[in-house]
Structure formats: structure tokens, C-alpha cells
Image 1 (cartoon, rainbow, N blue to C red):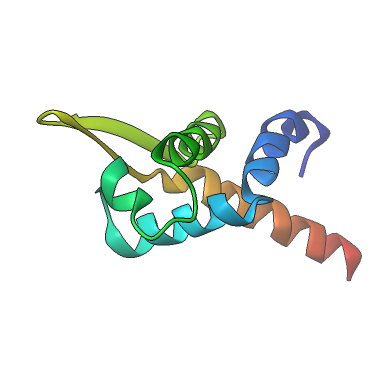
Image 2: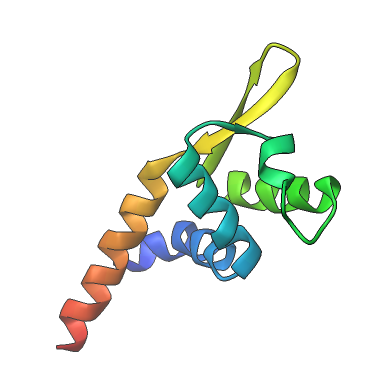
Amino acid sequence: MLNSEIGTAAPVFAALGDETRLRLLARLCAGGRLSITELSEKQPMTRQAVTKHLHVLSEAGLVKASKQGRQQVWEMSPEKLKRARRWLKAFVQKSE
């Protein structure tokens, strides 16, 4: 990773560093586009807390929201995850 990319990498890794956000990403990966109601099911927190976590993921570029009728639905935005994989690969290669 170039030093110039560290600023864009930090929010991604910070967002991925939370277990709840990782669970939400896993649900989106497995379920495709899901509403906040669907994402909040079986979560040990309020819908508002889930929404807050989704906004952190969105600010990091990992998910995006769109309107589907009256509902807001969330989906993966895989480009940042692909970049994170490349960054991690570069770290591993440099340490070998």
C-alpha cells in the first residue's frame, strides 16, 4: 500500500474492526439487498443502533442504501472490500 492510500484505508479497517458491523456485512453478503427491518431481526440491539452501524459502514464505502418503495434497503458495495484485500495482500507480501 502506498502511503497516500493510508487515509482511505483507515476508515475501511476501522469499520471492519467491529463485530456488529462484520455481522451486518455477512448478512448483506448472504442475503443481498436487505431492509433495516430485516437487518435488525435477531439483533441484540435497537433498529437505531443497527442504523448507526450501517452509516459507519456506508461512510467507509462498504455498503450503500437505496429506496425500494417506502423502505430503505442496504447492499454491499464490494469495491472497498476488494481494495482492503489488496492492501492486506501487499502487507503480507512485504512481510514474507
